[in-house]
Length: 448
Image (tube, rainbow, N blue to C red; front, side, top):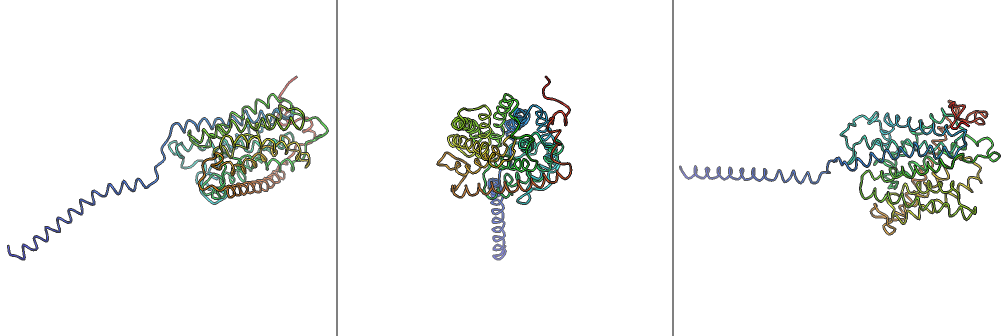
């Protein structure tokens, strides 16, 4: 071998060694790069059986709020001749909404789309299977949980125009209202692409979506349907405060699913929402009785259960954000504000909100929604928000309240008018005098 041949042989061997070294390093680096990429990527959702069990229970608890809780609460507050009509309206509204929720409601509320409404990509629950996850729970369970929220909200509205609206009109209005009012508001608040979500509004379990939304719709309905015949001239006292007390107690029990379930997991925030649901409600019951005792000279059972509901409503948006002491103050204060609206403002303006849907749900929801912006402050025991600035957050909460009021009030007025044109809103005077139970249902709640 001459010198030139030896030189090229050495160069060739050197290049081969370099190539082998580079290949070896690349093989060693590939798993490390893959590990780094996997660490940087978001973790895939993993089913949590504890969270799933809690959300199944929460869904059933919210159903318990509707049937029998809400319908018994409302049923005891109306006159005996109209009790079954209230029970039937609540039951059928919930049933119709559940079916519509599966058909299209869930998709409109909880798929990405514009800032005010989702799309129809999950209509008829397309693309959802038993093993499809939403966070740590099956998506079917999330569908069920949100379905109960959608079912109770229009059922709340009927208390405002109880004892005088056609059964068919109530059902048609509720279906339209779910479609054009509830689903858009739920989307804006709870879906990541929604207008109020992007704004930074805080609504843990439905202060805007459920209570302000339903309460202002109830006021619009009460005004458009008109006052009950004989209001102010005939006795229209609740026919069974005993049943209403039972219904209110059921609402309180079911509300733990409503509030603590909105944590969507069986963890610390669910625990916070649970204690807040206990103590805010207790504070509100005390607050209503306290102010009623001062103003009227004695407390009443009707006042106590009204306070319970006012406290539940007020703490709903704040349940997972406020501290327990703040929640007690919130419940106590909200009850006093609601008492003022029910006993003074309603009489001053003369509208016939039969079961005080506006005075308790809308007003209590407004108090709770705005107060959430204050009580979330870490200095007051609040949790769950970074870079907190009280003035900014309160202003965001006010914007969310105003948006909900306008959307629901204007939209509900249009829907009431549409229903009035199609089938009419109000029963005939003779039907109202005899009672909706016997004329529309052919039944009586009681037989003497």
